[in-house]
Length: 637
Image 1: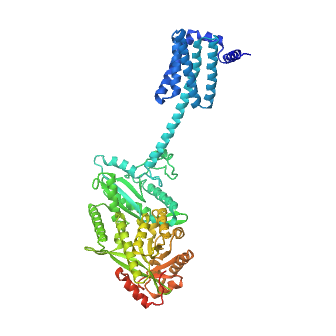
Image 2: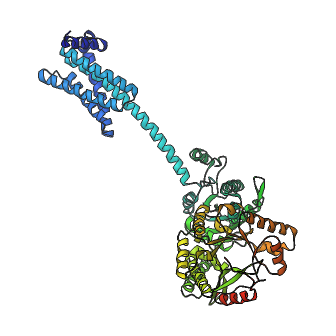
Image 3: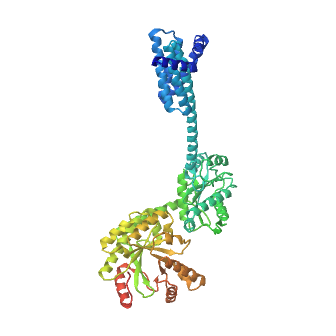
């Protein structure tokens, strides 16, 4: 069989399957069918052109060209070359549209696209064999346009799902932007947004109460971060319930909004059954805005009621926990003209009234002058550092077995020209807040290493330890600063010690651990200072690289008078020794206490029994005399 005859049979087969010639010709020459085809193809062309203008899609381009050409082919009585040319346009553009439909469509669309290709081949064959008129190709194009329309609607469904997903994500992002991730309470941004609108109303009179949990950091250290977050959530829920009946407290979130937004929140603890009228400011600070018109003391009364109700301990894992609070109040319009201003002034009042926990402190402009005075003092402190006018004292640390001086603790005092002698604990916290702590620490390190260099020249050996601040433990340059200072002084880094307060481990434990690990690796001696004071945790004794534990003097002062204090002291000593840590008891004031500690296994001590703090400049001379009196002693390693 010749190839021409085989091709002809195949064309006839496809033609009989898709478009029987008699039916096609009968339908085609019907005027009604012509009108329907023109209308349908014109409508589909318009839809495809709109799709093209929106997406610049090749599929819509070629499909609309094919449909428009089909309309022309039906509506205008073309003949000869014009008829053939228009049919070719329909044919070619249709095939190109099918190609793009096949590339982008789903599996079912791909299958129909293949059948459409066969249909167009069949129609072309029948036209070639003069079985049908050339305009029949418009019927095939109608099927193509319907398929394109189906693809457009499917695309619109996908777009709708994408828009709904974006809306859900936007709702979640908005919820998270206005709420604290731990407690689910409205945050500072939400408070500012709601509050600023309210205080702009005529004759507005509002009070802003800020409450801080004072001892949360200690509790967080003792129980761990996860339990600390759980406690914060419980505390937030309790505050919310206590404020539910306070009619004048401003509502920040309504229960219906909570229910709607909570689906976007990942916090399962977000309360849904009541309005929310307390904001979380972060750092265990909470804020409450209230309408104080005609009730000028409302904020003080609310604080008193809250603190009284919150005195009932929270229970976590069978442990009862007490909280301590401080409060500050600022009022509109007396103190500020925006929520941000009121927050700042309320914090200023709070910080100045920490000692008086029974009542909240109302902001007063004189507090700003006090703040300005403190800033002026910090400027003077910086100047004192630059001029080397701070006074340094040192207190020896002694081996209880052989009376050898193994080290000493460095203390800084500031003899202020107007305020007299100021101990470090009175200006260290303010120095941390203002950034002066960094030059102060660097100056202390250089003074300590210079003294160690003098001891080396006098053939004396000792360690010198200095207290390190929370902020410095987050300073990545601390290890390099110590290394440079020791190299300049010509001493080993192991001769320098750092004493770390427990609270310094609270803020960012992982960052602190990283810095301490680097210091430990370089030989710097690391000690936990005042261990056992407040909420101590034994976990960091094994987690953080340490050499020594210093027992807080509150243990030592009581240990000779009460058996339970002896038990506590003995337990700490045993735990430290089992972890291969040295134990240094500070606050030893008598031989009796020294001997008692020695019998319990403590080998190092510090206190007035051995020496009061002496001026740093006289330490070389003092140590020389001590070694002469205790010639049987041995020096520090």
